[in-house]
Length: 313
Image 1 (cartoon, rainbow, N blue to C red):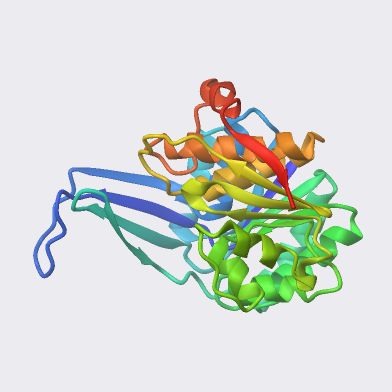
Image 2 (cartoon, rainbow, N blue to C red):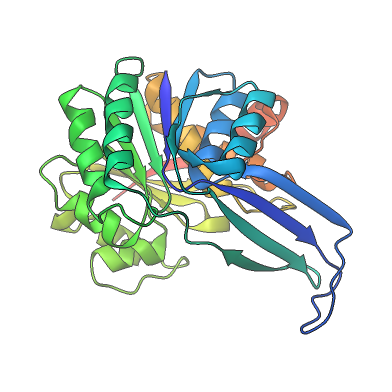
């Protein structure tokens, strides 16, 4: 069983506009409202692939109830801690032939009592699972090393954590005595960790960064390179993952789908290569769908066989 954590979920609202007109009324032909946040994208993909999953995090107000209702509709097991504040909205304006403009709320202020309630609930859930994914940003009121604290609690209960975050939250986790089993930076985030500027197109730079002593203790590092696939560190080996060119409908959420694939592979005890291929395949499948955090399992084998993973020096 996999536990997914979304500390700052949102109602993701996508407005489809032929053209974005500033200082004018814009009428949307199509509107989508989904239970959003990176962790919930991970949750949906794991669920769609038929693997057992529980979603947790913080929810509050009517917007929080909307998300909970959506999860019930999708038959996803959820155990969120209730907060007094209103869960946030995230707005995406899709316009002018493929452009996307986003407006993201910061999220509610979390009180000390709510923080303590969540950690108590989190400890209980750890008794039911063998792996945890943590994704996205923290809401206001939670300290920068909050994820590090969660990873320590999970380690004390013999549960490994896959962490997909950035900035201070990621740096704090790497500086902690208890580190995650896996991190999933993109090239820019990897460069930030090792104080270098790294391009998606320069595999040599990515490989050099993954060999940095700062990252030596991490068992898994999956560095996303977008349409160029990924470079993955597993223990003392490095792998290059190459993916087929596809006519993507929307790449939004593909990173979350890739994390779902890593979680599935690790949870099921797959080989490192098959785990990487599962990750890449689910990222591709998400890109082939209009909805975020959505895959078509019937296409899994077709694209799994097209992903190439080779060991590199």
